[in-house]
Amino acid sequence: MSTVATPSQHPAKSIESDPTLSFSEQSRAAGIGAETINDFLNRQPRSVLIRLYEKPASCLAIFRLVPMLARQLIMQMLFLDGPLPVEDVLSWMSKEGKREYEDCVERLTKLSILAIRGQGIKQTLILNGVFTEGMRRALTGGGDHRSFGVPCDTEDKNAVGVGFLDEYARTKWETILHYMVGSEGSVVPREPVLYLLRRSDLMKKTNETSGGRTSSLGITSRGFQFLLEDVNTQLWHLLLQYLDMAEERNMDLVEVLGFLFMLGSLELGRDYSTEDLPETQLHMLEDFRDYGLIYQRKASSRRFYPTRLATTLTSNASPLLTTTTTTSSSGGTEQEEERGYVILETNYRLYAYTSSPLRVAVLNLFVSLKARFPNLVIGSITRESVKSALSNGISAEQIITYLTHHAHPQMQRNDPLLPVTVSDQIRLWEREKNRVLQESGSLFTEFSSQADYQQVLTYSQQLRVLRWNDDQRRMIFVTEQGNEPVRDFIRRRVVQS
Image (cartoon, rainbow, N blue to C red):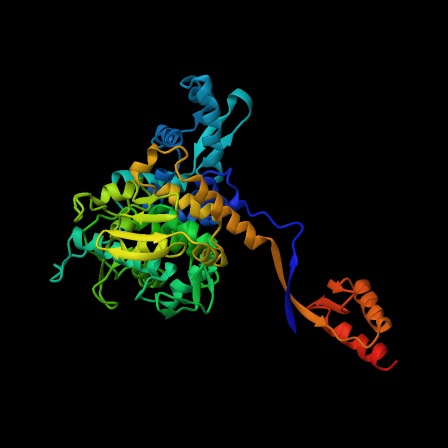
């Protein structure tokens, strides 16, 4: 068996590498954030949604997820005794708002929250009865549903504060990110986390050595794009995969969704009891500890603390605290570092003003690092470093997008932002890699005569397994699928003759 590189006349163009796409479009093309929790809910059957609305916390969470006009419609109808005429709704809307109204009605109808009765000007809007009851309870209280969690009625001798929970959540979440980029000394997450990363196509099986250790998983192109997103988008991307796995893991989807929505309504810094949680949600507690959504002092603890990652799931608040008041030794704050920390020169030299091990590990994916100081990393973009990134599925445009996204404020005055010589060379290195297409197969040589060679050549052409041939040296290369048929033909026809 042999492997040969053959010219690729029609190389496949990856949508992720299209320089005309914006940063958000590249993420959507890569599948990061392409589906939201709203899209997931839209494709659920009515029976699942009705069961979900039996929990007031779920009603309130979904209410927060729908557009503002949809919320106004719900509040207009929530305490009405009868249906609401469409004519009355349109009377307090402008012409421009009517299109938005139609979109909101369609959205609420898909969620089985709203129903339309009648035709023409006599149409009326009716709220789903189960949703109405659940939403009323969410706003006014009452009932024994306990969908907003059950606060512990005993004092926790090992109580923790908000600051501890923020640090715990950040550490847990960055542990996963460190593993993805292969940081030196990074902790290997539990198998359920690794399975989710593989299923999400954020990592793939590999035996390459990274960060001084041999890892069975390596980051993919989608995984690199995942690193560019904000924490909330990253978290929901994994949680949606988690929801998709509910059925195959014999978990009740309604209980899974209900627990996620409950977490979004809990109070940060307060401890809640686990005693009334069903089996599915107890199992979720164990899983969510790995992602930093939940803190428990030990696995058998009867209380848990939601972290900021959990309490901001269904809101627009920042999921993690940024320590904007922390000043580095260079005099700059981490908030300034967030705005941009990379300086790239025309000679391919790169200076990164960061003290974050995670950011250094990400840079190490496509930069040859030369020196590291407490708040500065120096390196170069080389052919070898870019080739290494390309071999992991990271595209040239993703590298350029990352450098643009994290460019230092001093570089913002440049036009274009990045040196053209560097960005063009990165693209050229990618084209250099894509000029050939590698394919496994069999190489047949040393034919005793031209007639034998011609017979085998004709047969492989008829089978459409021929990939390359050299008439002068009598060499034929066929695909892996054509190996056995061509060998059999040689034994039957060529050898015997």
